[in-house]
Image (cartoon, rainbow over all chains, first blue to last red; front, side, top):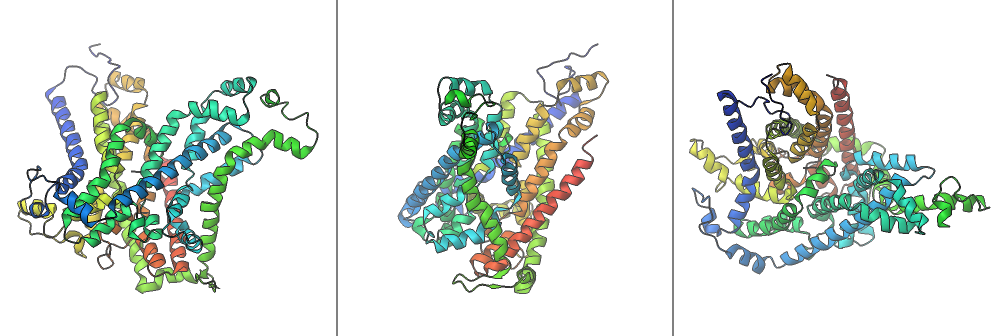
Length: 294
Length: 311
């Protein structure tokens, strides 16, 4: 047998070591395609940051510059001078998104533990009801939730966005799935040592669930940081906007002063990009757990 | 108490009162799931039921709502000379192109990534995934600029090939195509990640056996990889179909006031009917039409793709 089996290599790899001309060409073509796709993927973001640091007079000339030779912070200065609420949008987004994230971390882990490890009558039915609502598009609840929000005088209140964000049950499934894999002996050992039921959750389950909670926190944060339609409907005063609503409003407010729009959009994109680069691993873990759409 | 509960079979047996016994035994279970059930009921379950009730009413905020039966469902399709029908058609066009391209591109890219080393795989996955964490609003702002009729990057590019400048998203004839093209050029990050994970979990022995039988890389991919990632494909088809049916942010930002009716989709219609014209009943009915479409599409896809899962 002239074929060497190389276990390090992954599936589609040609198993023979001696590569023919054809195989070498194929490999080059694969790299070209993959790199081309990466360029296509990243180009719009590059273009955003390029346009954000380029004064408007330079960014609207043809042919455009492909590298930031005219870089300046002019657009950002104009942004903060003219779009006075921008820092507030940032603060609003942060407050709303962090509140929703902490809510889900606690409540979803609690429920995940309950559904994974506790026995009680009606558990199966309750879980099935939760599961079945995942299919319902969130647009269905827009009208009734808007009416309640209005009647409770919560329009333009961050609480309206926080409460609506607490409704998602996806996290419960993720946490349940993860907690099911934890060995029961650990809980029982803690009980023998005199832990209360809540103590078992707090001292045993919570610390052990950290990897899943990391993924849950990250995807909850990103999802709600980017939320658009609900804040758009409920937050109508500029000082109450979240970042996506604010950035979209820049387009109508500064119709032709593109520089301000790009500066605003770039600053809004930056934290989430940094966040992704820092927590890339947990992020992609979250995707595999079926958490994120993209 | 602690040593009573940890052994499930004897838990609570010593307490007399049956209600107390029930709570002693199951109380903690309910307590753990209760916060989640409460928020779920208040913000999902009750609103869904209430939305259906509103869809049967001529709903008014001041309280004199009247029952109109299924009239809102008729109105949903006929109001404003039937723009909702156009919106459904546009949504379907958008969905078909998006789902097919995303699946195809995702499959090709993850197959090409498979033989690469760990470092290269991580790099490409991150590069493809990065844009999808940025909000659709920002992506919309960028593409609005790329499609700009006067200074847009795209007109510069097509100009290099001697094509005269187009108005892209500002033109009724090209707007929908431009938006679909944007989606098709977006690397389907979730598909790449999930396909890669599925391909990595195919047992290596299968490939080794096939290689011993003389099957080449393409043949291996066709006869081993493809059949074994079918359930992932099914999941992705359903996921992308639902996301496409619900598209709103991107279109709302790229063409805020629409280009005639050519960029109307289902959710922009719901938004306009409900929150710009304040016709709550009709908007609720349109939302339920969306719900039915999603349920129907998912059911059909499950049936179609399941029937030939076995290779």
